[in-house]
Image 1: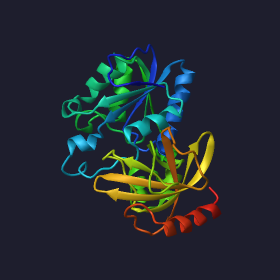
Image 2 (image 1 turned 90 degrees about the vertical axis):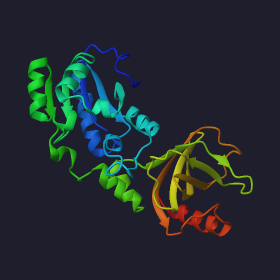
Image 3 (image 1 turned 135 degrees about the vertical axis):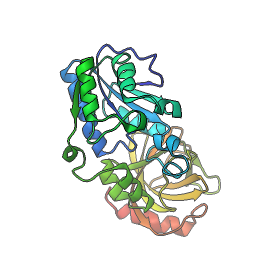
Image 4 (image 1 turned 90 degrees about the horizontal axis):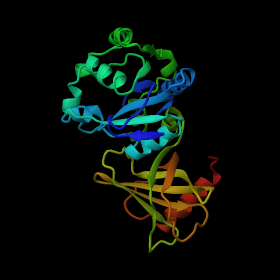
Length: 298
């Protein structure tokens, strides 16, 4: 997958396009992306997702809807998960107030048609775009007739068979319901980062979560796993919030090499206790929770 941060550097002769924030890259998003990739293959075109950063609500409503909005994925995590789908191109548009003022017609003609040579555009149910969200299926269909591309709307029942939404996933994560969030995501909720070993605790490692927009579940203890040197390892995770930053302490079920040099993807599977985490976990907490994860199948 090629990642572009400006339209000027994109060179595509024929494309199938969809747009949206795609926070979480959840099962509903995957329905759209799978159809996008399928149509691109049928039309001998390239699949393109146009997404936005920061999230539009943070720019347009910084004191209300966007003020405390947390993202399910960091930007780098979102890129990694989208790459797994088989998408050809990801275009990350810097969302600004000026960009939000572009009309739906200008957006389609200037970007989808002139820059990306769209032959087919796919949208989710009840999708709106352009200034004041004025663009909808009817307007896009009319623009398609004028500009020579087809329009396809994914039916509501195909996208939301389980009423999946980023809002519901955020709610589940805020409440610590990891298994519910994972079912909506169709994968494990994760944190990416480079761990360091704690000097005063031989087998405990730490990952700092410095992305202030990343959603952090409640301070508690979780069953988790990670891939290290090609082997899946179970781990106990103690998650602690420190202001806008989070600290992830973890203890692998089996001994690992003295230093873990690569970035890890720590996958959360279940909240296993109501323990509120404040600082490095004690020996008693380690022993108790290691026994718990050893009995869990995940």
